[in-house]
Image (cartoon, rainbow, N blue to C red; front, side, top):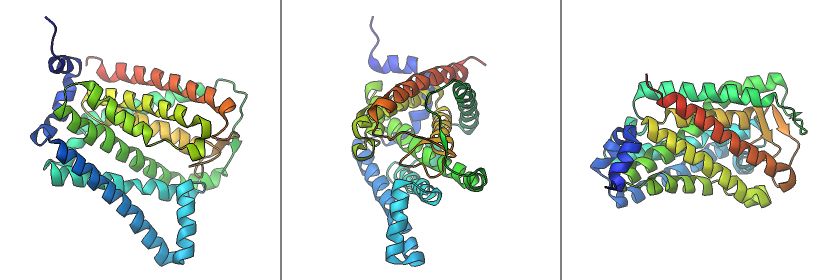
Length: 305
């Protein structure tokens, strides 16, 4: 006899059931939609607060200049401001969970021991794989962007900033959205795919990426599906957050594209984000690397102990 979707989902992702249990108490869709409104309001409010502080410090013209640097992330301080703005996303998600679903904020993350362990495993796997990949000869040599001294001076704050940015996105998409949708719908096509599509579309930027915009959306969507799967098989955000943190650390702090959010990078690649000829093979290469890293992490975090 063919099992129904709900039973099949429990058998495929048993750890996910405990992860979504806190969301079952108030799973109504109106609460989720209202919660997303709270997230957006707090997130926008964070930008308003930053703009107000900058205006007090530098005046209106100075604040506009700072905001331009923040939006493009083309300088170290501008990139740090952009990363710090994700505090609003995290706080908005926490507020939505507490106000509308009446559950503890900690339930967004999963069990702390598993969270920390899987985060460390994912970061270690990414470090090894990225290190091995850096040994592969390439025709595109990165060029120095910051001096080592300047880069090191920003490094502690940059690491904290990336922890905040990746953590905020994981809490919203793989925590709040995935949990609340899974509490309402049994099919992974809803609770896994829908947040991944929204996450990918949030990275659609044709003004900066040109003809590469949709391929980048596809690459981000693949990453999001891998992160959603890791969250489901482990019952915590640890593996997904570790994967996200390690990936963004390399892309933001080590080697960035010569364009948006390159202000903190030690090196940049001499290629425009709009260059389809040069960039598309790199994007496809990164997608294959994402699948390989996901497979290794998944094996390590799910093996019997």
